[in-house]
Length: 252
Image (cartoon, rainbow, N blue to C red):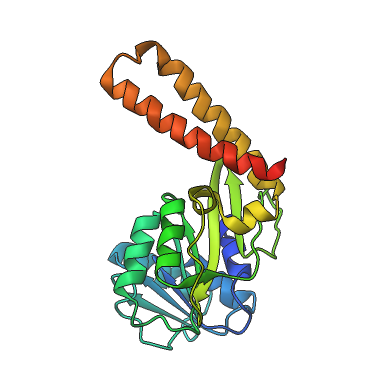
């Protein structure tokens, strides 16, 4: 059996059982292999822009005797995926802007029946803005989970993994048949409206760390606030701190 990271395991268990999965930016193909081995997906498509990682994915697939159930494709994003060919599309290990670009370029492949499970490493708030603007709806509820070594919470629709002090958001969404509410505050976009409404414990811990880091940076550069560049940075940190405090107010 293939061994994968806790984050990828969460992504895998957010995929509906019986769904065909296309993994974009598959790297070494670990996620598709795990999905098939665990009986979550009957088959999968491992896709990557780079030849080197895709060759390694092919080798790992062969080593696990899954050539008849996992295809590999050299593809720029969703370019080589056909409409209705996959029920679920997973995209992990990229920034939010890049994921948004992949989804935008592949919009003809994504139908109202297509589920996206994505894990943006950065620009998460910006990515939530993108989802709403494009009519995507985050699934019924969301949770924020901290992953400890060898420990897994499976019921996550939007979550977060903490590993080596870094947090990863994981979002499950699909195109909505109805108009998606766009009247969210910037605080909700940054930290997830459903996570905030549920007063998630791990999100609270994350916010406290964010606050401490933000204040630490501010205190370290305050002595140079006469410098225009430093002054601008302090303003940015102040704005971020205001958003963090608004998020923490959900826990009052």
